[in-house]
Length: 484
Image 1 (cartoon, rainbow, N blue to C red):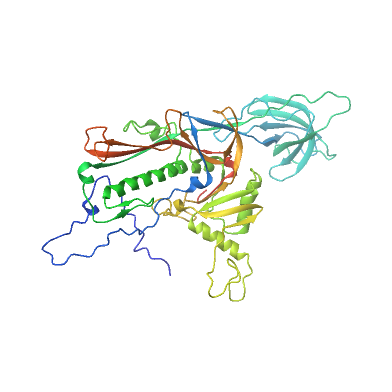
Image 2: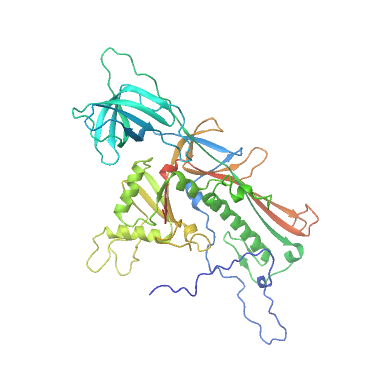
């Protein structure tokens, strides 16, 4: 049996822009002989409805005082060129290679007008298609300009070149060799950082209630997730607006995308107060320059071996946290349980030595295979009013099921501070100075509810924050989703 589609989970919003008669009990008729019994406290049928917690668990918040946040990340210590074409034929003792330098993720040719190969260096060369390889020494210095260079290599092997002419090869340096009494290495290499940046966005919200409605006493005691309660309906609405805004502070950092130069957002003039630049959220950054598993959920050890193999080629962070939806969590549990031999007619994983009076634990909090992986459910991915009801399966495109986040912190060069600083891999920067703190601003305007700022017969509670998320070392993150 499967869960029927009807009845389904409720998606009717509880928030409206105007007070409704349904917010109050109005069916009191004095001609009715018997009045209904009423529960004075509303029932919290959806439990904790907030979805924020992700950034609070893995990140930190720190101030920034600029419209742009920039940081530098280290490049690789060694350089490998993967688009190199041999001009000589099989068995040749020397060959000229044409090297096309790679581009960055944005399609811009890497900086510099030289390549990281010099005279006298020994190189490893292999055919990208067949794996046939040679080792040689650079005998003619690199020539050319971005993006195309040439070098001449003499082979060590007596049999000469092991692959055909015009083969596309990869080349990397593994050392050097010089004769006695010769001059030193020609030229030197400069470290090259990769500069990343992000721009904060302004997030706003507001709750308004007129003075007359503030004097209306409800008959139901209302509550919210942060503990607020009372018999005044506007108290509930104000607190729910606050909770909703706090959720937006996180979901905006997770989902934000930059506005393209010719996009509708960048060019729109209909609503002039709308922002037009966007920001780089966590999902966008990891999808753009991190690692992506496109098959939904890895369900076998061989799947995880593929993920681990990729992590080996990146930062190789020892401890990682998996933020997953419910199905992903079950798949991990089932995979780990399958490694157990079980027992005859019973289950031996979870709480071991189970007896009939003991709860059976069928879940796992983490596992180790090369690295440590700690698993936790991410409510945002389960909530049906958010990503929890998006399509899944091979034909689904873009539905995210989980995110692997490296634990700990890393050293980066902070462009604003002008020095190296230790930062969490994932953290939020908010606008602040000695005169203005825009981390989480709230203020009351109007002439009701104690406010005395205008002649408006209402109370308006305003919320504002200006912030951006910094995803450092995106190459250490893994995004799990459906779709190529």
